[in-house]
Image (cartoon, rainbow, N blue to C red):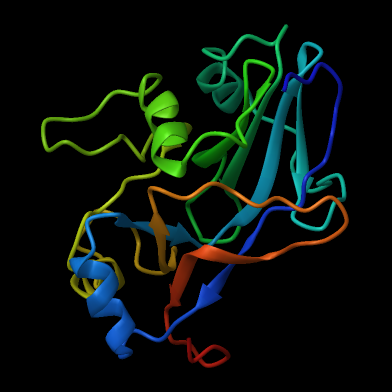
Amino acid sequence: MYFKDFIYFYPENPLLVHRDQSLIDELSDDPNFIGEPKYNGSRLELHILNGGIQYWTRHGEKFKMFDGHPDVEDGLSQFPKDSYFLFDVELRHNKVIGVRNKLVIFDCFIYDGLFLNHKTFGERRNLLENHFEKDLDGQYYDTQAVSLINQYKTDFRKVFETYTEGYYGINPDEFEGLVIKNLTKKFNLGRKSNHESRWMYKMRKETGRHKF
């Protein structure tokens, strides 16, 4: 199915899990699952359509606290503005001191006008990887204005702890948790509200407010 006009889909909500649950070990040992860091930012839908870029919240509202930046627009220039692209992104801006005007892409729902509901998460990820380069360590450049989220294949609890301690080059204040996703599953977007995901889990960093 192809789209040429704007359409809003409510993204799925990951299921919350605690890092001490045995489920984390089961997911770490399953080759179908990967882990992705979740930054302390604003999760948004990014629409590239009709020559422009639009930012929408998880609640179906136009995002009003950021209307673009030349560095971000330059990083997105690889995606033609005369087509339609819809991305699930995190805006890394004004939530952590020293972090501004950065965008990280998690997923793609519409690619070059094509609705990707027939594609698995792994297949959608492959489409995105064609647009980004890795460094000598095999990591995507998350210091750039627009980057692709890095993924980890196993040892999710260790990855979680390493990010928490700031050993991946990211300020630990910006690390919010780890989202674990099944590469073989397809998305389930809502038209009226968010759905609880059946293929995504989130380990949230413990703070004074959150214990998951």
